[in-house]
Image (cartoon, rainbow, N blue to C red; front, side, top):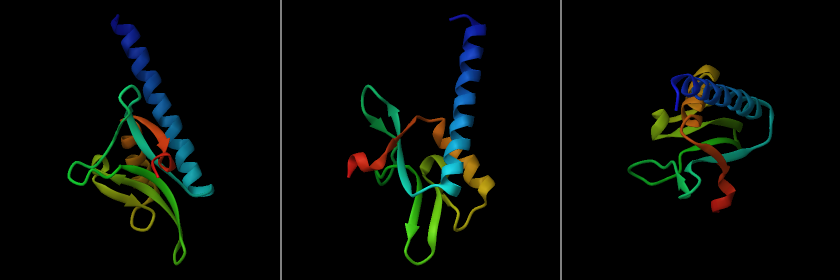
Length: 112
């Protein structure tokens, strides 16, 4: 692949992650509850999981009956749990961008 084509594809990929980060963060702030996992390979049905526990790494907005809605990202790829209860919006956006660069989002309910 020519270098110029590789550069264009990389820029396109970065733009896609930026756009999805903005869209999901807006849904976190203003939308209904959701829960996504990260699919790393469509062909093998591989998903991003925490190394020690094997639990899915997630992007979520949850309704807690006591504190109301909170939202964030959790998993080894972002250094643990980054959510609106203890982190700033900017920290959540950085974590969101980092995890979105690793694969595609898939609704978690697919596995329940």
